[in-house]
Image (cartoon, rainbow, N blue to C red; front, side):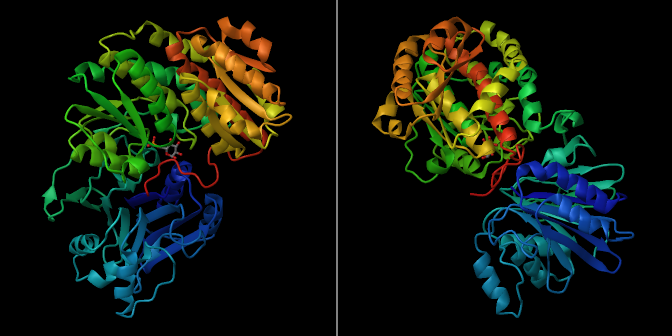
Length: 589
Ligand code: G6P
């Protein structure tokens, strides 16, 4: 989703903006732009398409001495991706220039009001209203003007603002869209997320809703909603700069799969649950989106199995708009890699308002969900750059096991958990087998994933991974549900990936495999070493994972699925790390 960068002070402004935008590319975007504030006004360069197009345009310019600038990668919501709709947007009189993440819900109303005052709009975006509204509200004091402007906006926003009257300042504001700030020896810097400024500073100020910041070369002044100057502490982020770089791997996704053993190890080292008082709840609800939702589905199986507590898992966007029945002794678990997914954030707020206690499993330190939850467990995956989530999922599962252990008074135990990183290493070392199977199956137009119990939960994630990066149509089905519809789609050569890691369901699954094979399916089975011989009797291809207590199987068995999706996407020539239409952090509804 859109990305913001801005800097002021002694930086090489255009270069820092372009470099920052390159760090935000992973969020997903379809156009990009920068604006610099120079002696003779604000200059904007923007265009549709990849950052390389923008870099080319910028390289032809001589910006001279321009100490302040803002940049943006846009993921289109209002208006198609084209040069005009790209950010930054400039006010009619050229005094203000704005980059915006989020959605201004009342932009039509504001636009009509401004048009009746003679303002003309050049773009189809909701964001352009902010630039003109700033001009309309300006009476000489930028902070006052920004306060008045944001008070008229409904919806979500993170803003970077330039004002011609203040040639060495940069301004920001936020509501429900992430924004971080930092102060370095060279000057102040803002961005929509941490990796974009990590090479400049590790001491990060996290903007809160309603706050406005005036960013100068030597200081950042924060204002609260009432316009009072406030004290704010920086959070120290100890992510390695390298962890946001590819480090010799062809893609971030492959690198992040290789980081799973260390990420899971780091997560297992987090003792945050030991410090949480958790009374056994009557019911648990898990709320999340995408891959995090799939981690929640696994969580449901393991918590119900080990702690005997009923668990419901719900997609956050659905949770928000239903009548929820939340009792006194209910616990809500919110799962989010970014901690900024807007549906998850709003669903969490709803659950909180209904009186539920919230425990959040979040990766990004200091993110909105982490801050607003009653308790937070950080998954310690480190920065995840590829849009397709891999190490975030396995660390979310690790956290789920730890929480299940806590809720079941130690039923799970830590012995097998500690073995998991080594098992993942072994699976990765056999990646060439998976690459070979991918090379046999990547041409399929549809690939199905089936499993039962925990294997079904896992199949949902395997299928999502494949479709999001390889664009192969894929669906996950419960093995027993196949014959109620999906089996009609199986024809000669249709690839089906079958997870068979659960011994008590093995013979049932073997029956399902026979049914689809009889109709021509090409079957790849993922199973444990001890079940491999049996699996070979029904499968066309077998991928084995180390023998493991079945309850833990998803956290290791997902790795071959991630690698399979990765190799299929590479073989199909897809942009693995930045799949079309997708965004890493979905900060709009
Ligand atoms: C987007 C990402 C997915 C992610 C989902 C939830 O769709 O592309 O990879 O699983 O958002 O994100 P979160 O940050 O809340 O885990």
